[in-house]
View 1 (tube, rainbow, N blue to C red):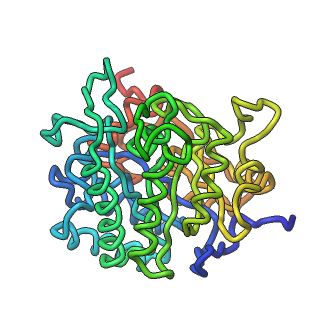
View 2: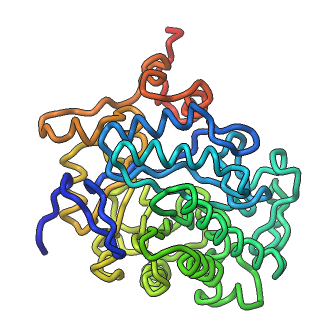
Length: 365
């Protein structure tokens, strides 16, 4: 296998090319307006990373329907009224030389009823769940597939380069994929083929609705972690191949710790497994605890085609420019709120990051 250079361009299945193999991972930040419209804070946060040399910049999760919103301050892509802000964001990222991706999303059982005003729904009713989600009707399923399709069309109209369907972290698609949470006895439950049907149908609907030049990707969780439950490694390796058949241009695998072996087979690392599950033409991006250039290079050597940076990109908005110097050491947490603000985080984003223990420096001492 030829070695991959982190700073060389990467070409996707559809022929689109990014200037390097470094992506800004999609991250919750609660910076958008209450109705989902783009805020200046959100624009500044993303534009600074584009200026900092990221080859690909992904937005935070953007809800495709009002009832799919997962938290306050979430970017929306559910209605044409949001197009002016989305168009402004796409233009700002394009001007800075990055490929722009909207992560399109539905929270399912994890949608916030206090924000949406509606009872959340999921693959099945979940007893004991504080959100009290109801089981999806066939109408819900048909509606949400159409909503993902329409969101992708909206992203294309706005001028973005692509979308990523959020199938990771236990949101709607993950709830259908789950062997423990999906209790359905129809075409969307039971066998893994059935449990994967919603994600695959949404992916195919998106792919069919946008030009071939528009990037379509999916993000998945390989195994159980946090809110992602009832997932099996081998099922998700199969899913990766299915999604390639459905026309994706790239796959993102959210590892949380990119350097850990799989839970199911502790002697095997997930990257070679997923790389083998995909055609060579479909790039594999991985995310999870990547801080240094040496770490990123080691993941490419394992078979990843690109890396997605999250917390390291928060503290180091120009990581791709700085990391060209092999001796450079990135800033790590904790970081004072004032310095986070200089790096493009609004007060709301900084407050959100206080949930991550030790990330925001305690300045009271």
